[in-house]
Length: 325
Image 1 (cartoon, one colour):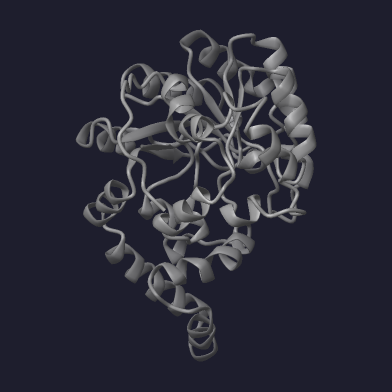
Image 2 (tube, rainbow, N blue to C red):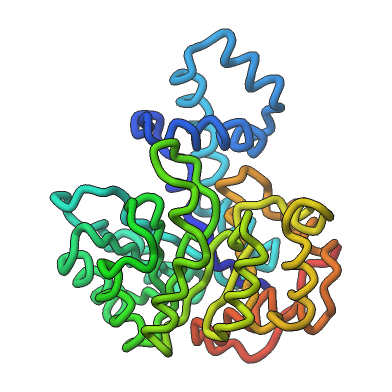
């Protein structure tokens, strides 16, 4: 059994072509060839299409095929076949404009109600929208069934230790709600790569003793700093989402210290998370590579589901068979 703590819905992962802009252009360039592979296009075929057609036409075609291939029925079938018990839905509140209304969580609330005990809703908070955003998050948690909050500091242009986030931290500390915080490299050329450094998590962890934070994407490329934080703060958790598993287990990729301590000192602080939709890797292939990690049996169980079960208070008592190699 597996609990995925970092993911989204297919319709969110594969944005509509009309929504692309210069800010996320680097992300589209990085991930679109991978999305093409999800529908069976080879990289060479994808590049040939780009040579013959405009990039917008190619992306519109790709989004159309993805929408059909990853309908909700098909998507749920994929999760069941891969033994994914719970799948995260990160409903981010992007942007640096405080004049815009907070992200709407009503649609995700409908999904949570329609498919009970299937998804973990993460409510997006935006510090530029202040109290109004905080009200939306509180409602999502107390009335709409959300079990977590999600923050992308690089999107907000605000480090995680900025006091603009503190009202949210106080709320999550009070309600016992974990916060997933992007803690890795970003590809926005106008934004510092260090804005999501793991050290920015320390002030909130010191100021809010019961606050539980998941450092999203593992802290790469600052793995030694991430490990130091985990060793010091036991209410800090970490995932390895958005990176291909075989490279995490491969020496000299920067993940060596994580793989070493995962089997020992941080085994109670690691949670499974994939973002397989974003990186364009079918979930079964993703899991096959994770199965090759040199984790002890008891550690693998904690990583796959036990730690997240406790963190999100899901109340799962027995493990069902994990997907075999």
